[in-house]
Image (cartoon, rainbow, N blue to C red):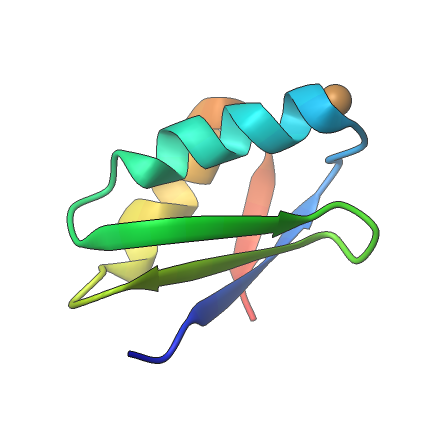
Length: 68
Ligand SMILES: [Cu+2]
């Protein structure tokens, strides 16, 4: 399965990373989440994941995401 990438503004530390990871992990179909703090990217692995649901989950965590 191909990972999908999201550009996320404002993640700066391990707390941000775990907040985003926790919310995105709850999205239907998500198998794993990688957060790259340095590049401001979130990589989502899974099957039939709805990108809008991932963006909403990242918003729920308090950050602004754009599918990249
Ligand atoms: Cu932080």
